[in-house]
Amino acid sequence: MAVLSLDRLSKRFGARLAVDAVSFEVREREVFGLLGPNGSGKSTILRLVTGYLYPSSGTIRVAGIDVVRAARAARERIGYVPEDSPLYGHMRVVEYLSFMGRLRGITGGALDRAIDAAVERLALGSVRKTIIERLSRGYRQRVSLAQAVLHKPELLVLDEPSNGLDPRQIIELRGLLRHLAQDCAVLVTSHILAEIERTADRAAILLDGRLLTVEQIAHETLAAPVPSPLEALFLELTQAKAMQ
Image (cartoon, rainbow, N blue to C red; front, top):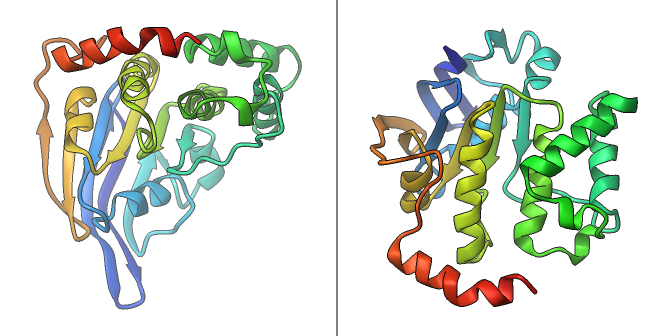
């Protein structure tokens, strides 16, 4: 079943056609990658899917709901982490998650349970009371992911989530995305082919706003992506530092 469906989606900015009649679907429990060089339309598509932009033509449906005609209902089914995810650095992790949960209308015991579940899923237990600005880039990204899944979305949308992460954090992120995909569909962009190849089930390649192809990606196992020999060596040699 398709969680996200794009049908001949187009977006024009003045004379420039940024997205040109793009169609594809993202299925349940699938990680779907959008690949393309800078300016290919990846981030524009994400902003269209999440309702931050309106299409010039075409349709977008999330869980069967038209994103334009029923924007609020569609957004309730989406979790979104933009490329530069805004965080309130002065807040503690649990305070920030509580704040974001209340913005989504989650209150009382349901909010407590949602925070506990998100903290567990993103392995944030050891830092839940830490001030966000004191966290590493990798942990800040986990906090961004945690707020995006508080309301148990059917679609998780991520724009360049590995940007700025070190090799260890990138490897850990791959596993987190596969773990999150057990409960929702994941749409993720990257201009780094290798990251999509290691994480996604299928990938679309974009160029100048046009969809060139959608390809199935072959993996021995996607449940827990296995580090390459060089990645395994890096993890081993940097383990002590990472635990500090």
